[in-house]
Length: 176
Ligand code: GDP
Ligand code: MG
Image (cartoon, rainbow, N blue to C red; front, side, top):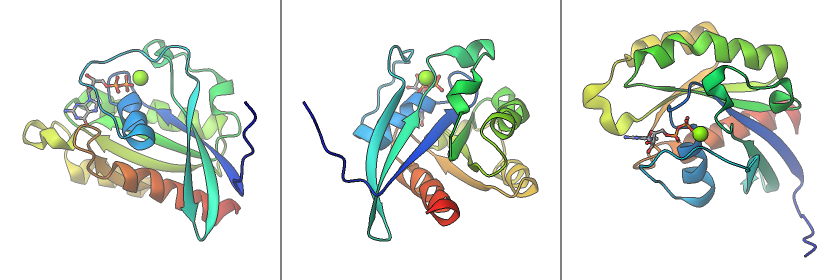
């Protein structure tokens, strides 16, 4: 079935960060408003798309999710190619996912390029009473790299829309 796209722009965005931080959950919350407590490895699906309006323009965002390769630190360069934006995600309940950020951040910079818009996302804020990473530390990490920081919950939807929208707006300012 042919479907004519009416989008004014197409932006590729990638999700990156340790396994289990909630990348696939953020994606399904944003694109389908769904959440499942079961962790299912993404199989087959390369990306999901969603159309958003910015400044009266229709932007089709193509959001790439990993199929579990991040467990082996083996995300390919092709994953990042031509990405205009990246959500670098950590799990605020698990310090090691914050300590591993450099690796993901550097990989984005090396493969998507210096102009790629990046937002740092601390996910699972619905469980903030057992958080292992302080907001101040995450904020400092983001400030040092001149990127935004936002705390989200794919479970209760806190700031998920805002995280994607703020990244998309940033890309729009850079490219459109
Ligand atoms: P991925 O490996 O980064 O894609 O992570 P998943 O999206 O598969 O999520 C890993 C686990 O964390 C799953 O059991 C999810 O249900 C859970 N999870 C994801 N996001 C949240 C959240 O915002 N809050 C809570 N409490 N759990 C979450
Ligand atoms: Mg996943």
